[in-house]
Image (tube, rainbow, N blue to C red; front, side):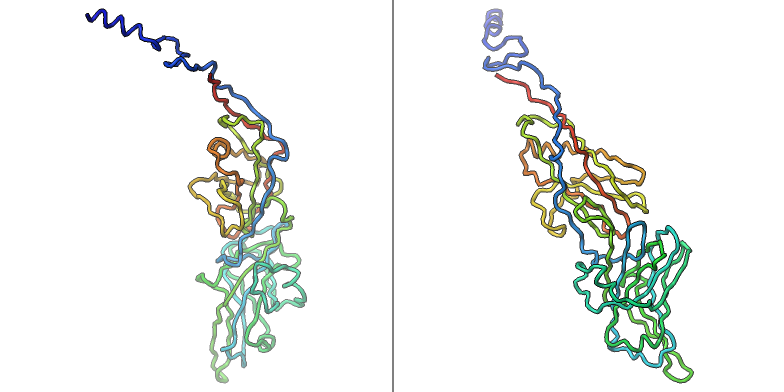
Length: 360
């Protein structure tokens, strides 16, 4: 009886030992998936939106000149409750976080326009207009300097009223840039007023900066793919997947080759994050980024080409059918440094993909 049962089982349909044949005999695989490649056209990778963060919200500020970069810091002081008669001396002081030098370390202090509440729209042509002779100038070639201290003429200070706006900039020959500490630091921007309260008695009053911001002029067209920590700027890169890519192809490898076209990186390395956008980009303040799903790049001044593997991102667009809103390139932090460079893709990029096996 057992012998007959074994014969019956072996003769059941669908128990063919052919590995290509299904148990239902309805289809079978003719071949394994093939590895193929496709070259993107030059216009498949294009620059999208560019953005600049509101640098006035940073706790640090920049001033000076480094290569083609020029930065100006502005400080507002309220003097309405301060008696400024009988002055013996007045100094403007601000601590320095870091210095990047390429030559002489020279700065000027100027009185500037009284209305710069919309700091994000300030332009050098506006607040540098009609500055005249500086209130004070200092020069120091030491790399260990920790504070700028400008001594001012007391008669000039007496002429000020309720509010004064001061600007720190490089001299015409200065070739150094510094990050200046803000009012939130242990060494805030302040005015030190020393005055006589009696013929032989001096008293010192400190007025802390009530508002501050800075502007950095990059010397680069804003329509280019610029990444900068000084302006906290970045860009969106649009990537069009070619229609000739088979609908069910699995992306095996897509290397985005990017060139450092022009760079100023005095603080090495310059860290950059690449994010997959899940919605249309509006502003950097409103975009929702998944910090756990990004590509982190370390940029060095002596590296010209960077290979970025975006295979996973492209697969989500092509196979998972997530909407393709491009990739966002941004500085890793908004720390204030002169680091910036133009990052551009190659004209021709290759997608390597695996075709799904044919079925019948």
